[in-house]
Image (cartoon, rainbow, N blue to C red; front, side):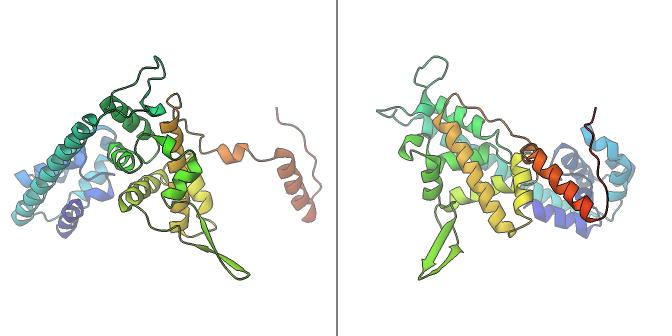
Length: 291
């Protein structure tokens, strides 16, 4: 539905999405409402920008200079009303899910993720559920919606899987090798829960765009394998992180940083390799430590 709004604006030669990251954010929604209300002056529309978007008022004014007619306004109003109605329905379903999980009976043997690490007391299901969502949402690319989908498929008790490797194998995110006679070759990871795969795929796609360890890992993998395989590897890494967050109540997510791989380079080996390359090109190399 949001893509239809963008397509409608493009039909009217209005390219707000080329300047704003989120057309349906605070700034974009204010401009859309103003266009529907009858505002057509590009400068007036650009002044509705909020926060960091105000640094690009000139570009916004150019993007808003189109041919938005009353017909476009009527269609945009219909689409925005449908989006608002769907958002309200999603919020209602999420609230019902929270209430349903909170009403579940407590397990006979509590999982480690349902124990308060500070006091050792067993947390009510609704508290443990909210706590797990908050921790999983800290992973790059994650959010409350994807966290709910993941927990809905794997649960809070990681004791049933015993290890992250078994969880990844059950979720069909581990690499697979098929052997036929003397030949061995890679194969697809397999099909499991479409809801879990969709949530992990959404998290992996978001994490790949960030300046984090997962984002840097994706950029390293994409150099030597297809995009789908690289994203599958990121999905597995995210699932391993989720396993450790849920199995250890004292564990918290801490990003290793996008420079993690650079820090692990063997400095002497790398230095010798570069010196050898320069000498092969006919240079005489003398090294002195930096201050």
